[in-house]
Amino acid sequence: MQCARTDTGQRQLAEIKALLEEAVQLVYHSRRSLNSRFNVIIYTNAQSTMPSRE
Image (cartoon, rainbow, N blue to C red; front, side):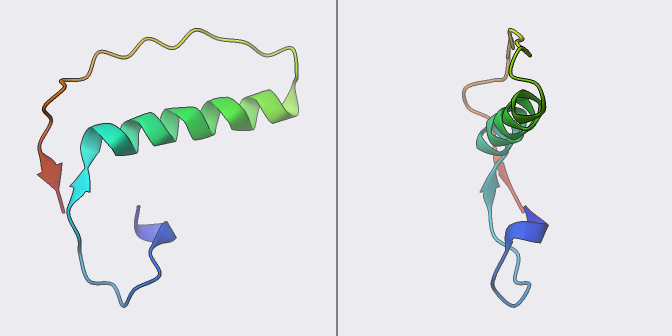
C-alpha cells in the first residue's frame, strides 16, 4: 500500500491476493471496533496464484 510505505517512493512488487485479504480484515476489524455486535461472513474466491504487481 502506498500510504504505508516508509521508503523514498520506489515501487515494489506486491502480492495482490495478500493485499486484498489484509484490506478485508482491516475493514472487518474497523467495523467490529465500532459495534461489538457486528458480525459478518466473508467469502473470498480469489485465484490462489494471482500475479504480483507494482
